[in-house]
Every structure is written in C-alpha cells, then in structure tokens.
Length: 589
Image (cartoon, rainbow, N blue to C red; front, side, top):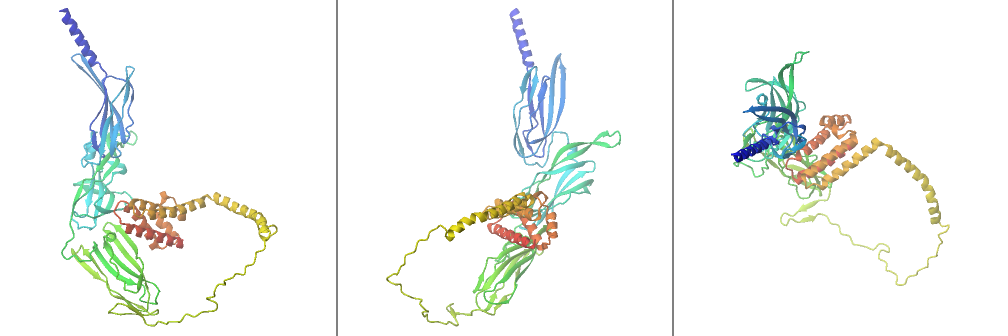
C-alpha cells in the first residue's frame, strides 16, 4: 500500500512539473495572404515575464501591440496566459520571415520560432482579421470600362473611382499594386489633382475620387482580363468620444487597403470578309493624303514627298503605305513623324513619312496613286482611300530616253574627244642621274636653333593665361554643371544608339539624355521636370510650339514604351526624332 502511495505521489509531481513548464510561442492567423489583407500575430506566454522584445517585422506596416491577460481558476487550479497582438499590413509582394521574439521569465530568456509568410497579389475579397468590416462596407474601388465588347485595336477607357462614405475621411492615398495590362497597348491619362465629388453608390450617398484613367487598345482577341488595382490609405474612423473643448467627434486613423474587382472584356476579331490586301491594322476614322512640296525643279535638286494619315484611332500601331518611286529618282530613307495626343477617347493626331527624292535627269516623273485601308468603327466596314497621281516636271538636266523593248538607256548626245598630249605630260625618265651632294649645316645658330630657344620663353605667358582661364572655369560651378549635363546628354544619346536592339535600356538611356539636355539648357533639376513646367520654360525661350509638343511627346514615348512592345525600326525612329528635336531646340534657343 505504501508503495502504491509513493508511485501516486511521484506521478502527481511529474504532472505538476509538466503543467508548470513555461511556454512562449508565436501564432499567426494565416501564412499566405494577399497584399491588401491584414495579418494578425499573437505572442502568447503562460507565465508573466519582463523585457518583451518583438521582431522588426520587415516588409510590413505595423499597428499594435494590443495586450491581453487571461487568468482562469478551474477546480482549484489556475490557468494564466498573456498575449501581445500585432496587426501587420504587407508593403510588397514576396516571401517574408517573422523573426524571433524574446522575453525573460524567471531570469531565463525564451524565444519564439521563425514563421514563413507568403504575400501574393491583391485578392478581390479581403478577409481581414482586425474587425474592420464596417470600414470595408463603406469604401469601394470601382473599375469602370467604357466598352466590354470592343474590336481588336479599338480604344477602350478604364476609369478607377474610389467611393468613400461621407461618414469617413481618407488620406495618404497611394498605389499598392498596379495592373500590368499585358495584353493591351496602354497609356495613362494624367489626373492632375484628386478632387472629391458627390455621388451615389448602390443608391447611398457617397463621395468619390477619380484616381486613375487609362486608355487601352487590345492586342489579342477573345476574353482578356483587366487586372485589379490596389490602393492603400489611412481612414479616419469616427469614435464615440468628443473633444471636450470644441465638442467635435474624435477620429482614429486606421491603415487600410482596397482592391478593385477584376473585369473581363471580350475582344472581337476584325472581319475577314471585305478585308483589303493592303490592310495593315488601322482601326478608327482617318484621312489620307500624299503630297510634295514642289512639282517643278531641276535635276539633282531635292523635293519632299509626304505620306500623311490624320484622324482618330490606333495611330501608333500600324504601318503607313510605301510610295512607289519612279526610275531615275534617287530615294532616301523616309523620316517618320508623329504628332499624337491621347485622351479618354483614344489617340488623335497625325503620323507621316517624309521621303527626300532627287531626280537625276530631265523629263516628267510620275508618282503613281497610293491606297490606304482602315476599318471604320462607325460603319463596321473596311474603307480604302486612294491618293492622286503626282507628276514631277524636271526642267533642266541631262536628258535620257528609255527603249520600251530592251529597257536600255541611250544618251541623246555623246561628244567623243581624242585624248591629246599636253606639254611634257609623258616624259621619259633619264637613264643616268646627275645627283649633287647635300652640304652639311650645323644646328648651332641655325634658324631651328633660335626657334627652339625662344619658343619655351614665349610659351610661359601662354601657360599663365590658359592656367588662369582653367581656374576660372573650375570656379564656375554653375557653368560646370551645365557643361556636365550637356556632356551627359551626349553620352546617354550615344548610349541609346548602342542599345537599339534592347528596348528597355534604349528608352531609359534616351529619357536620361532628354532630361540632361534640359538641365544643361534650362538650368532645372530632374525633380522639377513636370511637363507643364517644361512647356512654360520653352515657351518663355520662344521655342516653337510644334517643337515643344514633339519634345513632350518624346518624353511620353519614353515613359510607356518601356512597358509596351516596340520594334527596332520604331526605336530608330525615336532616336532620329530625338536628335532632330534637340538640334532644333538648340538652334532656337
């Protein structure tokens, strides 16, 4: 009996020691979440301690801690727990590690285990664990699409509106996750200022802000997905407390993120029936014209032939028709020009190819008609525009005639002359040379001697003069900045030329060249280079408005061309355009 009592006592003591063991652990509500969701982390212990040290929570916005203590008596036994709770908002996508927290209990240091967390792209429905469902019900990010069933290469407009209940206030509005538009040609329309406007959402009064506007041209047919946009901001949530002096309600600031819903559009292919053979993908409403700057000139003089398309549509997404240049005219590579603006209705403006032609002989040259075809969205049918025949009259120069049967060129007048000897043109060399020895001349006191002696003495004042100029140049801080920026502009433009085959590097280098050129000429920093400021400064310097528009268009091309497909020929055209625009501005300045 005593032996049983001893075993029972040992068993109870072992249980007591087991239950008295210190526990300190970290718990999370989830290990995989969207960038717009909130993660709750609890650091829980079963015995009170000192010097609690949380981890750094790198990659998250942190709110907290909230501390809770629970003490329960059950059948004479006490259960104790203490918890530090943190609410984490991811700042970017990726894999993260919540490192160890530490606390001292009974003089001993305890640490939690590492926890791996995966943050994905924004999810359509956020299931936050911080009790902010009332906020979610009063803030909505809506994606408005102008057309859900467009044709291939037809412009559609996407507008993102943030609806906020009038009981809440928001601040620090930023993009947390931006859509990629991988199956579209896209361009953002600048929203100069975020303005709250009264509106309704599902019949309830709201205030909405137009946050972003984007024009899309679908590049594939079928069902295409417009990815959601995620916004992060701070929300002022009203409380039941009021300021004791003013009586106004007190608001608490809460970090939140909201995501627009995914939108799917069904892109229709262009009809095959009635499609012209020369159709190159133009969709919209266009005018077409072929013209020359002169129709009468002399041989070896040059003229410009211009192929121009104007109107509204996908102006940057198709090729212009080629001219059929007659024989006897020398043709240079055409220069491509674009004057296109993009607004909520899509692209509008003109694109053109300018050919430089040089007739070699006297006579009449005919540039045959050129046809241009496009798909008209209004009539949903193909249209073809044909230019007029252009006859160029070359009045002076060597005449030629063409044999229709043998296609051989015969000269009308050929003057042959006999080659005659003039003077001693073909003298024979002498077989015996009559050579004379060269007399030795001493270097001392010779002309070369005196020049070598005097030159260093004369060079001393020149060194002093140029040294002074060099020091003045070094002291000219403003001038050195200008020269440095000018040098960098030339450097980056040459770097852009080297990267013609690599789209991203090419447009980054060209954008740097344009910025450094402005720094050199207008004395402004890159941080001050807003488009409005550039336009104003160039206007003050009396630069032509058309040249300014081309410069701004180049900057815009650099912005979006890094994220949209571009051919090597398009990059070459942008490079040539940048060289021409910089040269033109330099002359006018």
